[in-house]
Length: 262
Image 1 (tube, rainbow, N blue to C red):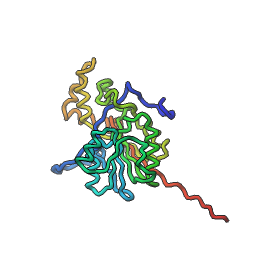
Image 2: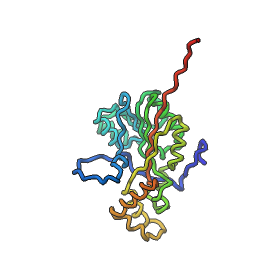
Image 3: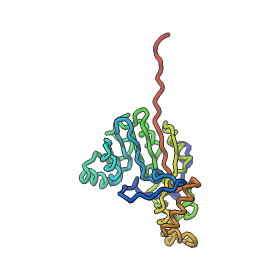
Image 4: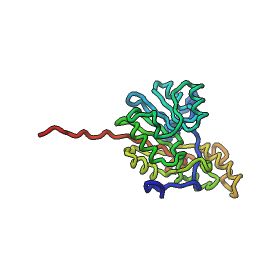
């Protein structure tokens, strides 16, 4: 059991993950098969415009997501514990970014409409505190998006210590769909959905990593091929056992109390 009674996996089951949503390029259109989900189920997810468009990206990294959302008209702010990343964003992109984590003294309550956490919550020592601070920073009706690796996934079962995610000792906490939802709800949010996210590149990386561990590669070596890894990723997705999950939550408006005397 972890802090606040929420079970989670500690250092022996930590997971490395790629930085947030990938950049999108211009590609020729290919007819989509009707039975396949749309591309939004990949982690190239972008929140819809909400409120006044004030967005905080927690764990913003090099700032690619910040830059893309800024180009779309959002009023963005980044937050990261890496001084090098913060300096790069300030000098290279000229976007507002802060050094540190949550809570942060320069961020006022109810000052954001949307908060995103792309592969960053698993890095912190106490995710519950971070989520509660995110709740305080959002206005009523504000939205939270959290993407994390899924410890309750087929790829983790397939690869064990060779899974791409076991990047010791950088990641301190990991989640299943159930524990992620429980922790977000304990922070005061209402979770609207927890969806699967496909990353075939993670499977290929895991297959490569089997060479570094005392494992018999066996059938796993076939997953270094793009075609095989994509099929396996789809199978994990359809069975709701992908190695990445995305939770969408909302800070509900407080009911008004009628103080008028009858």
